[in-house]
View 1 (cartoon, rainbow, N blue to C red):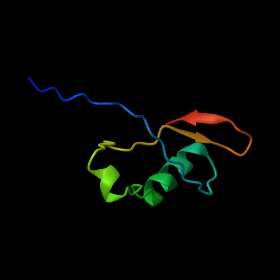
View 2 (view 1 turned 60 degrees about the vertical axis):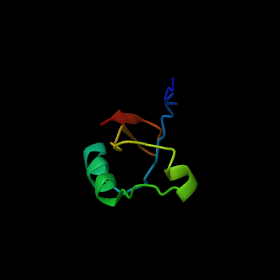
View 3 (view 1 turned 180 degrees about the vertical axis):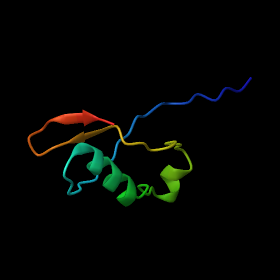
View 4 (view 1 turned 90 degrees about the horizontal axis):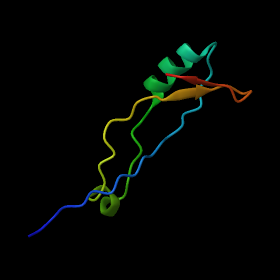
Length: 66
């Protein structure tokens, strides 16, 4: 019997934007976000799913959840 074993690998990607507040930063980052590319070898073995903004970090290091 064959089994498919899926290995989960949470990934993240950061986009630096200029904004007046965290809400504006999320909007701008979503506009500028471009799905990171993988080489053909990795792409055939990975399914990263949908990317969604998780949090914004200001220059002082304060994180604001999406």
